[in-house]
Image 1 (cartoon, helix red, strand yellow):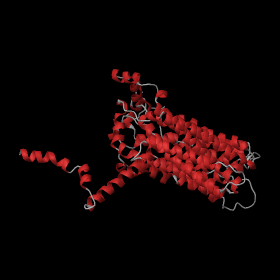
Image 2: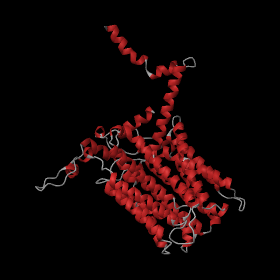
Image 3: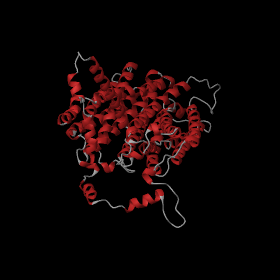
Image 4: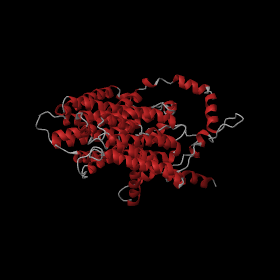
Length: 525
């Protein structure tokens, strides 16, 4: 019996994975195939993790995680609700970029200049800054009403945008784009995933969310390119090349709104708030209200209060502040590249909206191979190393895209270095957000003012600033816009790179008690 017991104890180590790997060699083809299959699975999982890190949703204690349904346990209505959540962000990103190839022409037809295009595009992120705060609070109470309001704003905004030419009103264009910004329900999308999916399925759901946004970024310019081939007949004001993006998005948002009202099911959050009920006539408070009142009366334990008091302020956390700044920087560079492309390519290469739209659509699709490469490299390099080398690529590309010899600027030069800038910024985003998720204090990973909210606001603010810089640079003439815009971006990236080099040794994840579990997960990978 003692021998059998010892044999039983020794079996796990005998068949452990490290030992299998150790005996694998060229004469063991079956074991080699198993090792290769496991490596491919690890690479695929790492790719999903890199994509999901860009979402930065709330990460509570997950003490009720076992009460959330797994994806294979969801009903068809719940799966459809999850799909509608993805459609929301896809339509918003499509709506954001569909006007890029033609908004300069729209401004000219309304009596302004092409330089005004930056202000037109920039109205959307300005509104999204406010919408993020509103929806972050609203999603605590209801998803459906918040989604319906966001979609209704997008429907109304596209009506204003499409009718602006008929009424000869540039104000209509600005109002329309501002209302489109309230169609940005990204904070609702993020919260929906956090509250609906358990930890087993949440990473895949987050990756699907980011993928939907990337597809929308590519679909917008692609739709604009297709609309440029439509014959609009005699010169009119209702349906033209400039107004067609508004009419198309109006149709898409209206269909989405109809399907959403009919088929979206409010997720069950009783594991978070308790059963939601109205206040009883005798004055008793039940359900969600009772939970909220009880949570206000709860006092933190002495240990918890002491840990929060000892925790340094967020602005002294070098990895968090640096990653937020770098996220702002890369989104600013990316926005200036994408939103300025139609004007620059029209001036230097005489591209119409079809060519520029196709180019932007191809750029959007490059996000997927870029993240595949990052996923593979993340096995060998730390997040800070990937950030460092991505910034080197961005700097070299910004130097290369600038025109040094007027009259001799080629399409190859612009396209090559624009592709490198896009790949560099997208390759940097995954490791940067991954480092942020590992280094942010736990109390900043939950609540309305959470790390995901800070990242969303940082990226949205960068888009807004980028659109303003485009208009300022274009006001001095499109001929000087290329160098004026990207030399400013180069100076910003160089300054950020020097800052990164200064604090490079401190760009590591937290190792304290709050993030012990997150650190162990990272080390296991």
